[in-house]
Image (cartoon, rainbow, N blue to C red; front, side, top):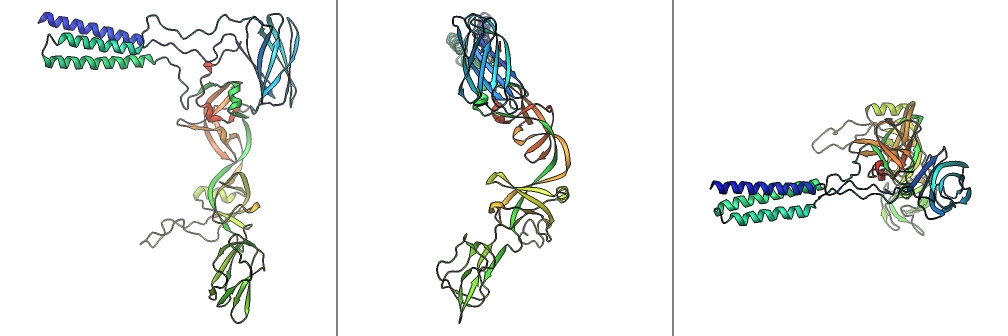
Length: 509
């Protein structure tokens, strides 16, 4: 029995050692992936001035006197592609040549760089666009190979073993031990040890699988700071746009929801003068029809025909009668609304109401027309207060204190604002303050808080967390890790969240 126990312990120890070795070695099967564009002969050069940002890309190799190059030209401040420009190039020593780039697509130009003699050239690039500019790119390798071969493949450690064969061998060892041991022990003991070996095999397999995935490159996590690599061609395809951050004198903006109501005298109800039968020669005005002040709307037949006319000019907003209908005196026949005369009422509380009463200018925005602002003027508080919520059954008092809403006089150009609509109101409060302001679209909101992407290099964007210091018309004030003069992404910001780290960018030679 002692010999049998020792034999079992030795066998189990050997099995565990073998399985652990296989699982551990399987974890090193894959080395770090090669970075995208890892060709050592890939040449990437970039230059910029206050007007343009230029990126030149080509592959340096021997065996040809022509090199096909791609040139990306964008506006420095906005990152918009410069389209329709003329790109002239000339090379200097060792051999001077001239060429003109051909437009491939907006902001992208292609050119054949002629180099009868291999060497390191200086390229003079001239942009004939909105603002003429000239750039010099020195020591460009043309007609020769910079580095032999291509980027090395991902390293594979000697003796590395895949995860799946390691799992299969571990299970095979467990089954073999089970078959050998069933002749030497009782059935109950065999079942317990077999279950133990299988569970151990599963745990070792999971361990090896987790190790096998270690070392893989990961995309930056949401909210993680650091530079991101975005090729210029991808920036153009994704419509990534930027704007220079500046300190501006702005007034803080207060936003609230208001509703449109008709101005006094803009809503009139047409009543029946006496009991009789309503008659109308021709077509009766329908809801939405426009009527003029004094226009004949119909008659009420009593003994004589009593004419009924429109009290104001406007649209018929409600109609309660048909031709030939018997109507009683004083009954509303229709309602006419002058849609050009409306005001906006905004319920505000506490400090917000105090600030709004000191303001004068405001604007109103309709969700159906997000790009249109309706100018407004703060008139003051409404003369009467209304309860924000109706009283519940059984309660004698409303559920909240009555509110005297803020009244805004609004310019309803085009008649788009109609009574009953909900609108977003922006009120400029306080005195102008110098703040570092960026467009509202520049801020990216993630789990870690707000942040912005700073365009630090032609193909690099750096995510930086910020704090919101105030809200202004179309802008927000920010602080922390952004300085005036830096370029911030204003369009396409969320597409940069999952961009790879800048460390994976191809090295420019």
